[in-house]
Each structure stands twice: as structure tokens, then as C-alpha cells.
Length: 54
Length: 220
Image 1: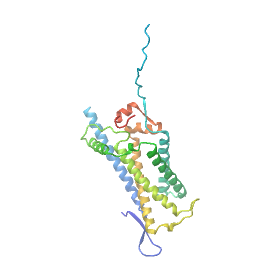
Image 2: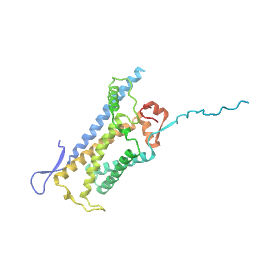
Image 3: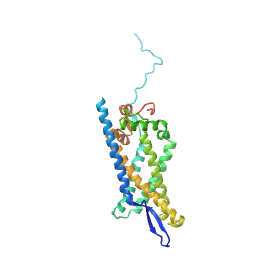
Image 4: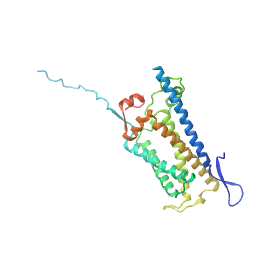
């Protein structure tokens, strides 16, 4: 997957960098959701451990 | 008849049942910033996802409003508030390590923080970097559009430089989306409801203060 978007320069020559690749948006959203799931699992386990020891 | 003793008998005032956490101006700033961020995300990404509408004017005007809010916050935090509340020190690094240890089961109880815990301070640092990046690059991009104050001039930077500015703006914008999702999760956790209420009411109860914070690190 490309990180950036390019377009061909109207003056010819090499490709012109024009911005970030918007196809990365699901990657950023997915990373946030993965972090949340991991935190939720670890928090639930920590809570169960506290309840067992009290 | 005995008279009541006079003199310098001082009765210590009972602590207030509520502890002030956020002044009204700061709560207003937080919610205005949230509204701006949501409008900016919607006008940025809905057209990309296929919902076509005239998004540019709403986007840049809201972006300028966000820039004003950010400048207000920086000035207020440095001049009128205690910026050290957000400073990440050795104690916070230690607390972060202890929090991770608690999550992984190596430690029974998490440490008590000051006004903001280490994760909140790190989140604030991350948001500051990302929002300053997206606002800074966005303000430069204003040079490419006609506004009531100036005519556009795309030649102020080279094509390569514009490419970098657009990359910074796009990457920072997508990071904002991830950060907002994570912020909503932490704000809506039951353990954080007392903080969410404080962002409306401005205060927390003395019980919540003593239960969740170290009184030596946050004197209230």
C-alpha cells in the first residue's frame, strides 16, 4: 500500500507528490480500534484479578 | 454565669464537598474545540468517502476558528493556568510503568496521579503535536484559496513544498481521527464518568478526588 498520492506534472518529467494516500484511513481507524480492544481486555482482566484478591 | 471563652480559638473550616476541576471558560474551550474538530473531520472525509457537497468554505472557516481556539488555549494555559499540571516528569514516567504493570497483572493497584495521570498527559502531548501540525499546514494551504482578506497565490511555495504540506496535513488529519476514537473510548469508560461529568459541571466530589487522585500531587 502506498503512503502518498502522486500525479504526473503537467510540465512532464517525474511524478508530483500531492498528498497522503486516503486509503490509509481504515488503517488509522483500525489501529485505534485495536488499541481499544487491547486496553479493554487488559482492563477487564485486571478488574477480575482485583475482585478475586479482595 | 460562665461566659463563652473569647480569644483566638480558630475552628478549621471543613473542606468543601466539591473540588473545582475545570473553570467555565476552559469547559467552553473544550466543547468548542470538539465541535470544530468534528466539523473539520466531516468536511474532510465525507467527500473522500463519496458524500459530495461544497465542503471547502465550511472547512477552512472552521479551521481558522480552531486555530484561534488553539492560540487562546496556549495563551491561557501559560498565562492563567498552571502549565506544570500537564508537564510530563519522572513521576509520570514511573506512574506509566506502574499502570502498565497493573494492567499486565504484575501490580495490585494502579498509582494515584495528580490532577492528570500520565496517560492523559501523553494524550495531550500527542494531540498538541498533531493538531498544531494540521492547523499549521492548513493555515499555509489558505494561501491557495481566495478569501475575503486575500487573493490566492499558489506560487508562494514550489510544487514539491506544497506536496509536503499536503502530506503533513493529510497524515495529521487521519491521526486526529484515530486520536478522537481513542479519546471517546476513554471518556465513555465507566471509570471515567466522574471526569466526563466534571467537563460539564466543572467539579468533582471530594470523595472522587480522594479516591482517584493523590492529594499531595493535586492540592485542592
